[in-house]
Length: 296
Image 1 (cartoon, rainbow, N blue to C red):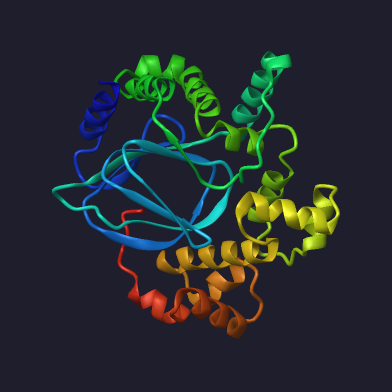
Image 2 (image 1 turned 180 degrees about the vertical axis):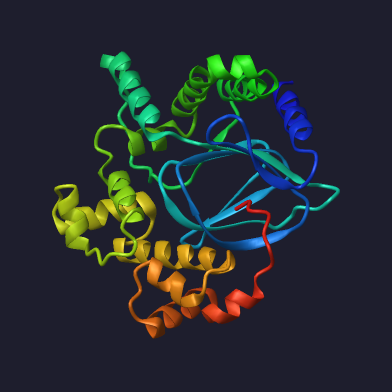
Protein backbone atom coordinates (compact mmCIF):
# COMPACT_ATOMS: atom_id res chain seq x y z
CA UNK A 1 0.00 0.00 0.00
CA UNK A 2 2.82 2.43 0.86
CA UNK A 3 4.26 2.23 -2.66
CA UNK A 4 0.86 3.15 -4.12
CA UNK A 5 0.76 6.12 -1.77
CA UNK A 6 4.22 7.22 -2.94
CA UNK A 7 3.16 6.87 -6.58
CA UNK A 8 0.02 8.93 -6.08
CA UNK A 9 1.98 11.58 -4.20
CA UNK A 10 4.49 11.92 -7.05
CA UNK A 11 1.72 12.02 -9.66
CA UNK A 12 0.01 14.78 -7.72
CA UNK A 13 3.16 16.90 -7.43
CA UNK A 14 4.31 16.20 -11.01
CA UNK A 15 1.31 15.83 -13.34
CA UNK A 16 3.35 16.57 -16.51
CA UNK A 17 6.56 15.16 -17.95
CA UNK A 18 9.75 16.60 -16.55
CA UNK A 19 12.33 16.60 -13.79
CA UNK A 20 11.66 18.99 -10.90
CA UNK A 21 13.44 19.98 -7.72
CA UNK A 22 11.28 19.79 -4.61
CA UNK A 23 11.25 21.75 -1.38
CA UNK A 24 13.20 18.83 0.11
CA UNK A 25 16.92 19.47 -0.31
CA UNK A 26 18.45 17.05 -2.82
CA UNK A 27 15.14 15.40 -3.75
CA UNK A 28 13.85 15.48 -7.34
CA UNK A 29 10.75 13.96 -8.90
CA UNK A 30 10.64 12.83 -12.52
CA UNK A 31 8.10 11.73 -15.08
CA UNK A 32 9.25 10.59 -18.54
CA UNK A 33 6.73 9.93 -21.31
CA UNK A 34 9.11 9.42 -24.21
CA UNK A 35 11.70 6.72 -24.82
CA UNK A 36 15.23 8.08 -24.44
CA UNK A 37 18.29 6.04 -25.46
CA UNK A 38 21.17 5.66 -23.03
CA UNK A 39 23.46 8.70 -23.21
CA UNK A 40 26.55 9.73 -21.23
CA UNK A 41 25.88 10.91 -17.70
CA UNK A 42 27.70 11.32 -14.42
CA UNK A 43 25.93 9.93 -11.36
CA UNK A 44 26.60 11.58 -8.02
CA UNK A 45 25.97 9.60 -4.80
CA UNK A 46 22.22 9.02 -5.08
CA UNK A 47 19.29 6.69 -4.63
CA UNK A 48 16.87 6.34 -7.57
CA UNK A 49 13.49 4.79 -6.82
CA UNK A 50 11.07 3.88 -9.62
CA UNK A 51 7.30 3.74 -9.06
CA UNK A 52 6.33 2.82 -12.61
CA UNK A 53 8.20 2.08 -15.82
CA UNK A 54 11.77 0.90 -16.39
CA UNK A 55 15.11 2.68 -16.19
CA UNK A 56 18.55 1.63 -17.40
CA UNK A 57 22.10 2.52 -16.42
CA UNK A 58 25.22 1.16 -18.12
CA UNK A 59 28.54 1.06 -16.29
CA UNK A 60 31.57 -0.16 -18.23
CA UNK A 61 29.37 -2.20 -20.58
CA UNK A 62 27.29 -3.81 -17.82
CA UNK A 63 23.58 -3.04 -18.07
CA UNK A 64 21.57 -2.39 -14.91
CA UNK A 65 17.85 -2.44 -15.72
CA UNK A 66 15.41 -1.87 -12.88
CA UNK A 67 11.78 -1.01 -12.27
CA UNK A 68 9.44 -0.67 -9.30
CA UNK A 69 10.61 -3.84 -7.53
CA UNK A 70 14.16 -2.49 -7.02
CA UNK A 71 15.75 0.83 -6.16
CA UNK A 72 19.23 1.76 -7.30
CA UNK A 73 22.06 2.99 -5.12
CA UNK A 74 25.01 4.83 -6.62
CA UNK A 75 27.32 5.31 -3.62
CA UNK A 76 29.99 7.36 -5.40
CA UNK A 77 30.47 9.58 -8.43
CA UNK A 78 30.48 7.38 -11.54
CA UNK A 79 30.59 7.89 -15.33
CA UNK A 80 27.67 5.95 -16.80
CA UNK A 81 25.29 5.86 -19.72
CA UNK A 82 21.66 6.17 -18.69
CA UNK A 83 18.29 6.28 -20.37
CA UNK A 84 14.62 5.39 -20.36
CA UNK A 85 14.31 3.15 -23.43
CA UNK A 86 10.77 1.94 -22.71
CA UNK A 87 8.95 5.08 -21.53
CA UNK A 88 5.76 6.07 -23.35
CA UNK A 89 2.82 8.39 -22.76
CA UNK A 90 0.67 5.40 -21.84
CA UNK A 91 3.35 3.79 -19.66
CA UNK A 92 5.47 6.63 -18.24
CA UNK A 93 8.57 6.32 -16.11
CA UNK A 94 7.78 7.78 -12.71
CA UNK A 95 10.16 8.08 -9.81
CA UNK A 96 12.29 10.02 -7.36
CA UNK A 97 16.00 10.83 -7.06
CA UNK A 98 17.49 11.41 -3.61
CA UNK A 99 20.98 12.89 -3.35
CA UNK A 100 22.93 11.30 -0.51
CA UNK A 101 24.71 13.75 1.77
CA UNK A 102 28.14 12.18 2.40
CA UNK A 103 28.50 13.56 5.94
CA UNK A 104 25.17 12.05 7.04
CA UNK A 105 26.03 8.71 5.42
CA UNK A 106 29.45 8.62 7.07
CA UNK A 107 28.04 9.46 10.50
CA UNK A 108 25.32 6.82 10.24
CA UNK A 109 27.76 4.19 8.99
CA UNK A 110 30.03 4.75 11.97
CA UNK A 111 27.10 4.74 14.40
CA UNK A 112 25.79 1.47 12.95
CA UNK A 113 29.19 -0.19 13.18
CA UNK A 114 29.69 1.07 16.74
CA UNK A 115 26.26 -0.16 17.79
CA UNK A 116 26.89 -3.57 16.20
CA UNK A 117 30.09 -4.07 18.26
CA UNK A 118 30.69 -7.81 18.53
CA UNK A 119 27.86 -8.60 16.12
CA UNK A 120 29.50 -6.82 13.22
CA UNK A 121 29.28 -8.83 10.03
CA UNK A 122 32.41 -9.16 7.86
CA UNK A 123 32.22 -7.18 4.65
CA UNK A 124 32.26 -9.19 1.47
CA UNK A 125 34.24 -8.36 -1.63
CA UNK A 126 31.34 -6.95 -3.64
CA UNK A 127 32.28 -3.90 -5.70
CA UNK A 128 31.16 -0.45 -4.65
CA UNK A 129 29.62 0.45 -8.00
CA UNK A 130 25.90 0.52 -8.84
CA UNK A 131 23.82 -1.67 -6.52
CA UNK A 132 20.17 -2.71 -6.80
CA UNK A 133 18.11 -3.43 -3.69
CA UNK A 134 14.59 -4.64 -3.00
CA UNK A 135 12.02 -2.24 -1.62
CA UNK A 136 11.89 -3.60 1.90
CA UNK A 137 9.41 -2.28 4.46
CA UNK A 138 11.94 -0.02 6.16
CA UNK A 139 12.93 1.73 2.91
CA UNK A 140 9.36 2.04 1.62
CA UNK A 141 8.04 3.58 4.82
CA UNK A 142 11.03 5.92 5.14
CA UNK A 143 10.58 7.18 1.57
CA UNK A 144 6.84 7.72 2.08
CA UNK A 145 7.42 9.62 5.33
CA UNK A 146 10.03 11.81 3.61
CA UNK A 147 7.85 12.67 0.61
CA UNK A 148 4.78 13.31 2.77
CA UNK A 149 6.60 16.40 4.04
CA UNK A 150 5.95 18.02 0.66
CA UNK A 151 2.29 18.41 1.69
CA UNK A 152 3.02 20.28 4.91
CA UNK A 153 5.51 23.19 4.94
CA UNK A 154 5.67 23.31 8.74
CA UNK A 155 6.43 19.58 9.01
CA UNK A 156 9.00 19.97 6.26
CA UNK A 157 10.79 22.79 8.08
CA UNK A 158 10.92 20.90 11.37
CA UNK A 159 11.29 17.26 10.33
CA UNK A 160 13.23 17.25 7.04
CA UNK A 161 16.67 16.41 8.44
CA UNK A 162 15.30 13.61 10.62
CA UNK A 163 13.28 12.04 7.81
CA UNK A 164 16.26 12.21 5.42
CA UNK A 165 18.43 10.57 8.06
CA UNK A 166 15.79 7.84 8.43
CA UNK A 167 15.90 7.17 4.69
CA UNK A 168 19.71 7.01 4.68
CA UNK A 169 19.56 4.55 7.58
CA UNK A 170 17.08 2.40 5.62
CA UNK A 171 19.51 2.28 2.68
CA UNK A 172 22.42 1.32 4.92
CA UNK A 173 20.36 -1.47 6.52
CA UNK A 174 18.93 -2.79 3.25
CA UNK A 175 20.27 -5.01 0.46
CA UNK A 176 22.53 -2.23 -0.83
CA UNK A 177 23.90 -1.58 2.64
CA UNK A 178 27.21 -3.36 2.07
CA UNK A 179 28.01 -1.15 -0.93
CA UNK A 180 26.97 1.97 0.97
CA UNK A 181 29.06 1.09 4.03
CA UNK A 182 32.12 0.46 1.88
CA UNK A 183 31.75 3.86 0.24
CA UNK A 184 31.04 5.86 3.38
CA UNK A 185 32.64 3.87 6.20
CA UNK A 186 36.16 3.52 7.50
CA UNK A 187 38.50 2.49 4.69
CA UNK A 188 36.62 4.37 1.95
CA UNK A 189 39.83 5.34 0.18
CA UNK A 190 38.52 4.65 -3.33
CA UNK A 191 35.40 6.78 -2.80
CA UNK A 192 37.60 9.60 -1.50
CA UNK A 193 39.84 9.27 -4.54
CA UNK A 194 36.83 9.55 -6.85
CA UNK A 195 35.65 12.68 -5.03
CA UNK A 196 39.13 14.11 -5.53
CA UNK A 197 39.12 13.22 -9.24
CA UNK A 198 35.65 14.69 -9.80
CA UNK A 199 36.92 18.04 -8.49
CA UNK A 200 40.17 17.96 -10.49
CA UNK A 201 39.06 16.78 -13.94
CA UNK A 202 40.84 19.65 -15.66
CA UNK A 203 44.18 18.67 -14.10
CA UNK A 204 46.61 15.98 -15.22
CA UNK A 205 46.32 13.44 -12.39
CA UNK A 206 48.42 10.27 -12.61
CA UNK A 207 47.87 6.87 -11.00
CA UNK A 208 50.79 7.63 -8.69
CA UNK A 209 49.10 10.88 -7.64
CA UNK A 210 45.88 8.99 -6.86
CA UNK A 211 47.69 6.24 -4.95
CA UNK A 212 49.67 8.81 -2.94
CA UNK A 213 46.44 10.68 -2.13
CA UNK A 214 45.17 7.67 -0.14
CA UNK A 215 48.52 6.25 0.99
CA UNK A 216 48.57 3.08 -1.11
CA UNK A 217 51.14 1.51 -3.37
CA UNK A 218 50.41 1.85 -7.08
CA UNK A 219 49.71 -1.90 -7.47
CA UNK A 220 47.33 -2.14 -4.49
CA UNK A 221 45.53 1.04 -5.50
CA UNK A 222 45.06 -0.17 -9.07
CA UNK A 223 43.61 -3.48 -7.91
CA UNK A 224 41.25 -1.97 -5.32
CA UNK A 225 40.09 0.75 -7.69
CA UNK A 226 39.13 -1.78 -10.36
CA UNK A 227 37.36 -3.97 -7.80
CA UNK A 228 35.29 -0.96 -6.71
CA UNK A 229 34.41 0.60 -10.07
CA UNK A 230 34.99 -2.25 -12.60
CA UNK A 231 37.35 0.12 -14.45
CA UNK A 232 41.06 0.84 -14.25
CA UNK A 233 41.92 4.30 -12.84
CA UNK A 234 42.99 5.62 -16.26
CA UNK A 235 39.86 4.25 -17.94
CA UNK A 236 37.73 5.80 -15.20
CA UNK A 237 39.32 9.24 -15.56
CA UNK A 238 38.88 9.14 -19.33
CA UNK A 239 35.23 8.11 -19.01
CA UNK A 240 34.57 10.86 -16.45
CA UNK A 241 36.13 13.47 -18.71
CA UNK A 242 34.38 12.36 -21.89
CA UNK A 243 30.98 11.93 -20.21
CA UNK A 244 31.22 15.37 -18.66
CA UNK A 245 32.27 16.85 -21.99
CA UNK A 246 29.38 15.14 -23.84
CA UNK A 247 26.93 16.52 -21.28
CA UNK A 248 28.37 20.03 -21.62
CA UNK A 249 28.21 19.89 -25.43
CA UNK A 250 24.56 18.79 -25.25
CA UNK A 251 23.85 21.78 -23.00
CA UNK A 252 25.31 24.19 -25.55
CA UNK A 253 29.02 24.50 -24.78
CA UNK A 254 31.32 24.64 -27.78
CA UNK A 255 33.51 21.61 -28.42
CA UNK A 256 36.62 23.57 -27.47
CA UNK A 257 35.08 24.85 -24.24
CA UNK A 258 33.93 21.37 -23.21
CA UNK A 259 37.32 19.81 -23.99
CA UNK A 260 39.21 22.48 -22.05
CA UNK A 261 36.94 22.24 -19.01
CA UNK A 262 37.63 18.52 -18.58
CA UNK A 263 41.38 18.76 -18.99
CA UNK A 264 42.06 18.14 -22.69
CA UNK A 265 44.78 20.42 -24.02
CA UNK A 266 44.76 18.86 -27.49
CA UNK A 267 41.56 19.29 -29.51
CA UNK A 268 42.58 16.55 -31.93
CA UNK A 269 43.19 14.05 -29.10
CA UNK A 270 39.82 14.96 -27.57
CA UNK A 271 38.04 14.43 -30.90
CA UNK A 272 39.74 11.07 -31.49
CA UNK A 273 38.91 9.71 -28.05
CA UNK A 274 35.37 11.09 -28.16
CA UNK A 275 34.66 9.42 -31.51
CA UNK A 276 36.20 6.15 -30.35
CA UNK A 277 33.83 6.04 -27.37
CA UNK A 278 30.62 7.46 -28.83
CA UNK A 279 30.96 6.65 -32.52
CA UNK A 280 30.55 10.32 -33.50
CA UNK A 281 32.79 13.34 -33.61
CA UNK A 282 32.07 15.99 -30.95
CA UNK A 283 30.54 18.24 -33.62
CA UNK A 284 28.30 15.46 -34.91
CA UNK A 285 27.27 14.81 -31.32
CA UNK A 286 26.50 18.50 -30.81
CA UNK A 287 24.12 18.60 -33.76
CA UNK A 288 22.62 15.13 -33.31
CA UNK A 289 21.40 15.23 -29.71
CA UNK A 290 17.75 15.85 -28.96
CA UNK A 291 16.77 18.11 -26.06
CA UNK A 292 16.48 16.03 -22.91
CA UNK A 293 14.12 16.16 -19.95
CA UNK A 294 17.20 16.11 -17.75
CA UNK A 295 16.44 12.63 -16.44
CA UNK A 296 19.51 10.41 -16.73
